[in-house]
Image (cartoon, rainbow, N blue to C red; front, side, top):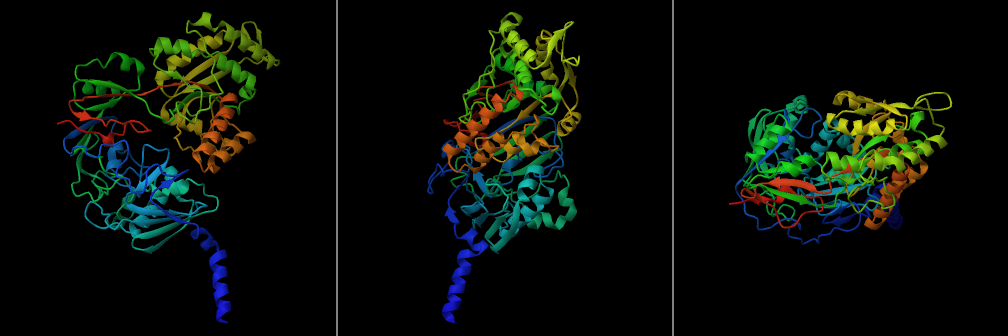
Length: 570
């Protein structure tokens, strides 16, 4: 009988669903989406920091607009972006790797081979800023609270968790649903940790915006708030994680002051008078002309992350844009070279990938190019466009392009940024030479978002953002299921089984080589499908700063200038 019980126990251990999840879990010093961590278990600091950076001084920053909340995890309200330095996460991301997380509040993490189980082991030294120890109860409270009241993407990912179980005060396990993607444990491991003892007694009030400085868990405390105008953060000299490898050499300023400006013109003038220390520029004409100020350092920081994909997207749900020959003809009519030369000081590069400027970009697609001279330089492209339109059933009749039914080729270009109007106006002039009469309509952000969500547009100026570890969001951008889901970002209406297969391969990739191959295949399929007119990107991160006040580290991270690694100049 005893032997029978032993065999039953062995059978249950080996074959039970729970055991199959746990038996393959391995303790890891870091979590990676694919491949192995770049840093060994005994690493001392991230490669893009100076571990001996001096502490002290003040960093002055600027933001445009205002703020009405100090709770950045809530969908309600607008919070200053610098609050990431006030609230720590379970694990810290390295900005020198595509997607790798290292110990912070979580001293160690175990993840199963099928990526359906994540066990977090809390560092016994971990403390909130009021000295209270961080426990499994805080992690579970944070998960439950953010699942219900967090931002949309957080809620979506957290709802893929099937169950949560705390084994003890410092160990908690997340079990994911069968349909959860492999990225879900990584997102959970980046959870912002909230103190249960502070927020739970508030009840429903915890769901509201607040300008009272809450108890944090990060390297800075909120010490002064001028509602909507400025905020001051002060380095917590009792920060428990200051000497952790994932924090060493970072968060070096004693004080961080952030002032808010009504518009960017006022903010630029303030920077030139040294009212703050660090500024990113996005306007190429300003970058070329407005920073020649004694004492200001301009840097073209080159990084490896994908640039945002900006484009004039075709809504292929409209009959007008279903034919790829029509879409290609309209691509031929867009003269990027003239626009770049005359409007942007030649500062931009043409986008030819859904992952511009990164190793994930396939090199098989090349956008049409002109010599930049304007109408004369466009003649060959417009002739080719006319031939494609004719093949697709569109002929010039009485100065207008018409189909066999006598319908004119007209459509609306939807914008929400007035600065895009000059691009659209020049494009309209080119299309007029083909007998096409588009109408430009610029509307406010709320209306624009509403129309995009309902796919109520012909052509629209949009933007997609990808990382060096693209994942489930690619299905939202390009997948067939998303094409029929209002609110998705498949603005083009792409419904292609081959594209779906490429997205599946991307999400199934477990090595960086497989990821790159899948990304190249997806990139090629989207770009050669001619679903949008790609625009442009800045080939570098345009950063200006006052070197008399702040100093950058020698090495730039893969994702660019990590301000937390800078320090004050004494």
